[in-house]
Length: 362
Image 1: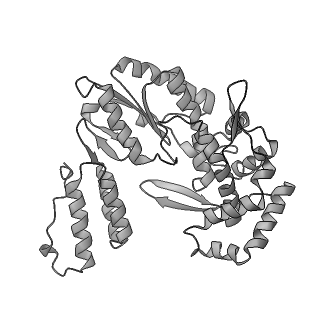
Image 2 (image 1 turned 90 degrees about the horizontal axis):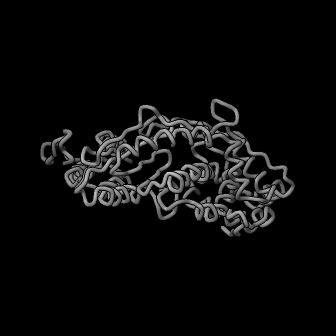
Image 3 (image 1 turned 180 degrees about the vertical axis):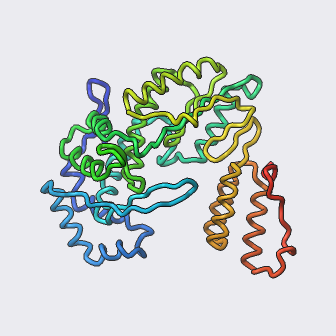
């Protein structure tokens, strides 16, 4: 998996064949990955009832190039803002897993180190820690004024141009049949405009958006020569002591996004501010010597804990999150609230609490 060779033009290309990818062995390995943690789900159980027949049938369709991606089940979530999620059938999600297993390692090698979304060994916590590191470097240990350019892509997933995405993939994958299978997945969905969008919910979408945005990453790093750049999905920042330079490259980034990727910056989410004034990035407010969790994130955290009746997994997840910033009082509040509900305290006044105002996290 993940094999590549260097072409004369300097482009690393995927060397595995379609026939290798779709073998029964690889389908079974993909199933073992896919089913982990999902055996209690009804649709998974139904597929597993006749597992080998289903996998052999899928293999035949893939081998004959008669595979067609089925429709999606759509539903909405709000965490924190409304999102439209599209869930594929188990059969199609197995194909997603198959391709993801084969392509992830290859494409991941083409990404820059400071792309942090949906990558093994990266993630949100690594991104915010890198921000702190870059803030120190850009400001010379906070002895100089450093500026941060913050940007966000408008309607990111819904705006991905499928034709452009397939052109990018074509540069890396010479095998026509692999490209055909990828196209079956990409073209199985469109947002409000035909030929636009990737579905939130597909495992392949996590990889493909990074393939798409890698063009921006390479432009910012290699053309604009931005030394301190971090991207997490559709959010990205650039740090510099030169505010004028940040203002100049903003228009270049905007032009590149539209000309090369048909994406637009969200006009209400473009900011240039000093690190000392506090930078709201990835759920935390970052200051020179500390960071505190965003007020809206804190409120959502307590609502989720309350709605799930202080389930230990939920509580521990949030306690882990808070361990990445200055939130000791908030950690104590969550622990006390969870303990109080666990023991069904009859008199809430017997359980000490902490003030719930905007200064609480400090």
